[in-house]
Length: 355
Ligand SMILES: [Zn+2]
Image (cartoon, rainbow, N blue to C red; front, side):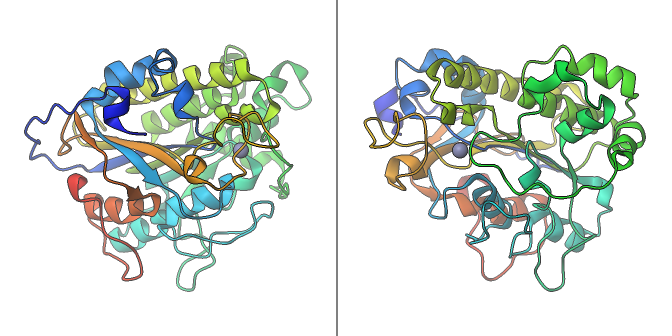
């Protein structure tokens, strides 16, 4: 994407000297093409991003993912700052230390201070690596909202639209233990009764709405300093339904705005939180053999690898559009610099406009 091509303009006001104390990261498992988003005919699908969020953000028009284009391995790369090679279909931890492990070890933070909210069984192990010196017990807590729902309303069929695991091949589904673990997460961590949770879930239309509901509840109850949410509704594109794909883009656009509003509305977050949003990668170009363009991410070409990122919060320039290509693994070094934990020599440099 190019800012000149799609009419995005840089406003360039002076940056604020205030530093961030917390970070909320939203990634999308399954990005969208420019045609349905930033191109002139697509902008109506992302009106919250275009009119509200991007004008308040430092916005990168070219974020390149040079790794494997599978959602779990790509999101693990975003969270480790290193391109990994773990199988996208196995229940394996990332090979390299995660941002959650660095954060907790260097800043001596308790487990309650960092959480991942993820849509799919396959993301159950994303918060703790297999790297020596880190591993079990050293990373973030992971909440899989659909597992909470399964535990709260076992066998009830009204909620099937919220329980979809992923839109591609089945991940290996790990044994997560008895429902007691999920019920404990609901009642003791999120402070939700099973009845209230089930009643609220009944009003939601998608797995991502359920994830955002849980994330907001976590923010209200624990106010974690590092919160990572992975959304996945847009990947319904794999079904081949263009209308469902568009609907998911619009919903994701709205949910991003709701998360930013939640940050503004909560005293624990307002004025001290970096809010960073980026898809894990994009989708194939139109007229791709074996798909409808929007449907898959199989080609590995420039279009499927290149996406965007926006950063909002104190210390970031509002309305700055950056067309320089950056690597998607720059996120972890940037978070290190923002939150003040120490750098790892193998990783890249922080993104200069953000730190
Ligand atoms: Zn996908």
